Length: 311
Image (cartoon, rainbow, N blue to C red; front, side, top):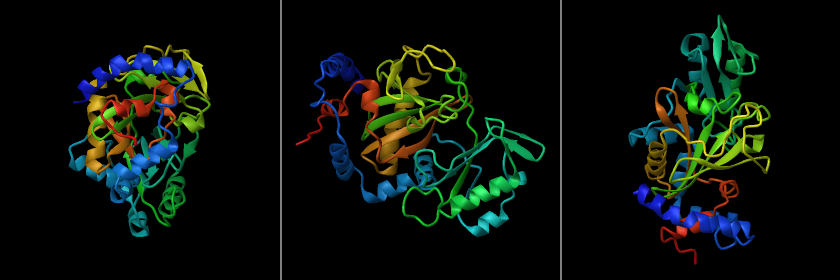
């Protein structure tokens, strides 16, 4: 079904960009109030809560047969924390994530292990005590991102990026964000870490946001700190017209995520693993609207093609 929608986009995209260039995007862009109205219309509270909890969301996605990142352990209380032994239970490379965290807060990554010490991508050491203290802070709700007093630590094996994408960046893991209405992809971008973002693919931490054409899977435009660029500032790799691998699979997975969790309007975050290909890392019930600036396209216009009535 999403392939039909991409064909519609092909004939609309040129005109949409022209309206942005002429300074008249108001009838096409999705503002924050309208986005919130869509969320209220299509995203039940129970589904929003499921999406906020990375553990619950992963269970729902896996139950639907959707490929997700693996799981090493879930530490959700002090009993499981006391029984956990990092040296015994954790692989050489891993990620610890707060189940209810947001914007990358509280994520701890290890890229390798030597003897009884792990190391970050920067080379900084991580001891067993560091791991336990971090997990305890997560369980105590230190990164929960909402009013929850407790949280769970989700421990996953570290994703090794597809070399095609890994070559674009100096370090870190690039990821993709695809906005969907029901099972239809509306807009996509790839987020590329920089040295300035400390290897994280978070736009607010100064990673690159690059718009991706739904129909071709190619990068059409890239921004860093609001400035248009054509090459990665650290690697010098050309970005414009770069083709994202496994693009049809990316869109297929993204289109299945919202319905699996119960969301009608969603943003799926996807990574490309060197061995497993596209994997879902998170589904957002409140996806941001900056993706429109990055693509120079309006989400409202894309939804209108699907018959969405904004009156």
